[in-house]
Length: 375
View 1 (tube, one colour):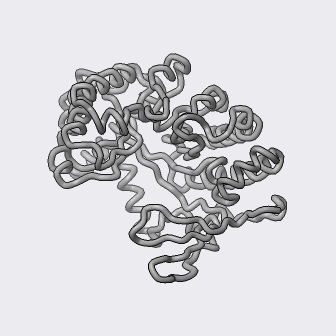
View 2 (spheres, rainbow, N blue to C red):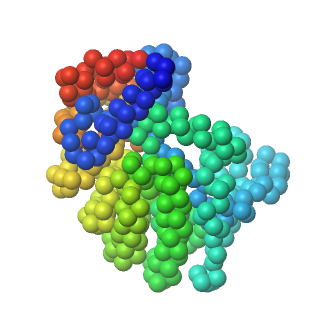
View 3 (cartoon, rainbow, N blue to C red):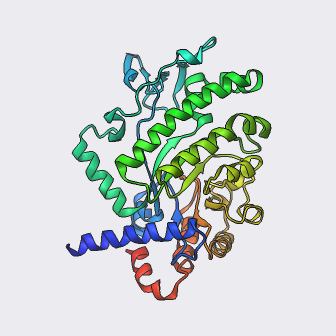
C-alpha cells in the first residue's frame, strides 16, 4: 500500500468514524460537517482547499424512476428540448434555464392503481449512475467510499408519488381521496424500498445506511396536515425504516427542505435516525429540536440564507461555536443546506476557519486532524 493510498483510507476511516460517532451520540474526534455548494470559485479553492473537504457525507444515487425504460429524447424544437424522464414525465427544458417545465405525468386523472406496473427495480442500468460503463462506475464508487461516509439514496413517498401523479393533483388526492392517495404512495414506496435494498447490496453500504429525500414542506409549514401525514405517510415510513433495518442498514436519514416540525414526533416514532438540512430560515431551530428530541440526530443547522449571507463575521463565528458545543457529545453533523454565490469569502472564512480551529474535540487527535483540514 503506497503512502497516498494509506492517507486516502485514513481520511475515509476518519469521515466514517466521526459521522458514525455523531449519529450514535458519542463524542466525535472532531465535529463532522456536511456542506454543499452551488458556487465554488477558484479563489475559494485556493484559500479553503478542495470543495470536497467541506463535507464528510455524500450520497450515491441509483436511477430510481418507476418507468426507467421509457426515458428518451422526444424532440428538439427551437431553443427547447422535450424529454420523457425515468419517471415517465414529459419535460420541456432549455440549456440556459435552471428549471424545466413538466408538461405531462404518467398517472393522470382516472388512474386505476391496480393497472400500474412499474419497471423492475433490479435492472442493472439503474445502478451505474449514468456512467454507462460498469468499470468507470465501480472506480468512481470506490473513490467516493475512500473519501466520505457514503449513503445510498432514494426519494421519499410524498415527493416521488408527486412525480408520477403531478404535485398539484397528488395534493388534491390527499385532500379529497385519501384511499387513492394512500394506495398510490404505498405502491411508489414499495418500488423505492426495492431500489434502496438493491442499492445497499450493490454498493455495499449497509454499514453506513440510506438517505431518503422527501421534500414535503414550505418555509412556514408542511405541504399537508399532520393528520394526513399520520394517516397516509406514517405507516409507510414505519414500514420503510423497518425493512431497511432488517436488511442491515445502520442509519436511516430523512432529508426534507422546509419546516417539518409538526411531523418530527411521528418521524422519530417511525425510526428515523437523523434529519437534514434543518433549515433555519424555515424555523427549524436545532437547539429547540435537541431539547424536544434528545436522541434525534441532525445533519445541518447552520443558516445559509441570512447569517452566512448577511453576517457579520463575528456573529457567524459565535454561531459556529454554539453549534460545535451542541454537537460536542454527538447528535450533530454540522452543515448548511447549500452555499451559493450570495455568501462572500470573508463570511465563509468565519464559518470554515472557526470549525477548523475549534471543531477538534479530542486533544490527542488534534495534530492529525488539523493536518487533514489544512491539506
